[in-house]
Each structure stands twice: as C-alpha cells, then as structure tokens.
Length: 176
Image 1 (cartoon, helix red, strand yellow):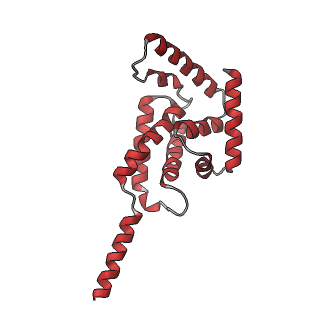
Image 2 (cartoon, one colour; image 1 turned 135 degrees about the vertical axis):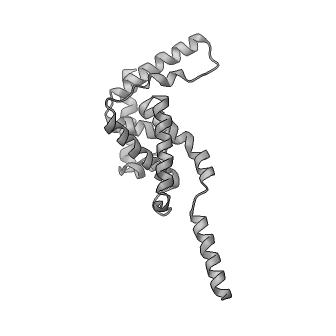
Image 3 (tube, one colour; image 1 turned 90 degrees about the vertical axis):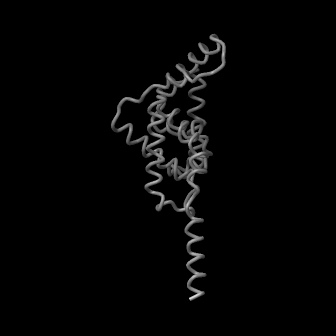
C-alpha cells in the first residue's frame, strides 16, 4: 500500500512538472505572439484578437504539447501561424501596417511624422514581398524567433530560412 502511494505521488509530480506554468508562459510569450501578429497584420485590434485566439487554442490543446519535439515558444508560435492563416482565409486582402506607427510615444511631432512615414514605407515594402517572405520577416523581427525556431515552426531548413530572410531584407533595403 505504501509503495502504491509513493508511485502515485511520483506520477502526480511528473504530470504537474510536464504541465507548463500558464501564468509564466502567458507573461513570457504574450509580447512575442502579439508582436508576431502586429508585424504580420499591422492592425492593433486584429493583433490583440489573434493573440487571444492563439492562447485560447494553446490552452485547449495543452495536452498535445510535446516537450521532446519543440520548445513551448515554438509550439505556441506554430499555433499563432495557424491562427494567422485562418484569419487570412476569412479576410482578404492583408491589412496594411499603417497603424503600427500610431503607438503612443513621448516623441516630438517631427519624430512621430518621420516614424509614420517610415512605417508607411515599410508597410509598402512588406506588401511587395511574397506571403512566405512576409511571414518569415514577421517571425524573425515581430516575434523575435531565431532562425532555428523559425525552421522548426515552418518546416524549412535553418539555412534556407537564413537565406530567404537575407534576400528579403536585401530586397527591402534596395527599395528603401
């Protein structure tokens, strides 16, 4: 009897250790997921809604997370990518990034105007890229993922991710 209680106590500890601390996960991953959507779609309201949907889907699918296949952040951003794809299917064309420049700041009016101009320019340059290139840029610079994490999330090789990102950034620089 004592042996059964010891074994069941270990099982409970193992199960609880496998379950991530959702408060910590939310606090750590929220900016990353939100920024991914801001880069990808630009609209603040959409980014907030898609971020909420991502965390809701992750919560419902938490039993399917496998620590041995990917980090939690990579798994969560894979869910975010799928949420974004679903959003695109429902809503065409893509929302421009014009609203990204409206984030409140303590800048001078000239600084704000310059940033808005740069954001409009960046949005136009991003629109000129393919969907795949825009998504990789959003994962890299919006969500702050490494090339390795992007490769795991997209199924591309790490070197292919680096090459695509390099070419996309060079294309945007040349057009700037």
